[in-house]
Length: 186
Image (tube, rainbow, N blue to C red):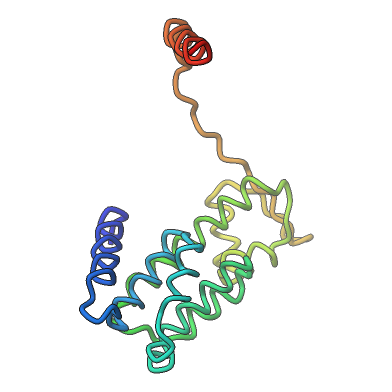
């Protein structure tokens, strides 16, 4: 499932929720939409969706509560519980692919966070933040080009260097400055 498809599905599910004949969408719509919000890292919308789901649907749909449990762990940045919850549930067919993608993007965000925030971190913390087993974690760190000291069990992440685009031309800067000064004068 691509990001573009997920965005389209989210729009469709939001439309279905708004246009539900009784004002209450189906449990599947709520489950899928909540899972997509987690995938998109849109925790505020996930929280508001959870609050507006009728209590009767929450009570009759345990999977919905499990999806929300993942959201709560994400909200608290408790990565170990995120992975534990994701891996302990047999997700229904309607949300299985989305929840699998949630795990992938959470791991990617964790790796990016580690790369930006740490010059050194324990292997145990990397495992906790990525949900990877020790051997897999070491191999993944090495593949990323990070240093791994087996004796001290420390990982030395390398910050990803993103290429900067060409700086704006002098004419573009002058135009923006002129536009701004004109705005201030009016």
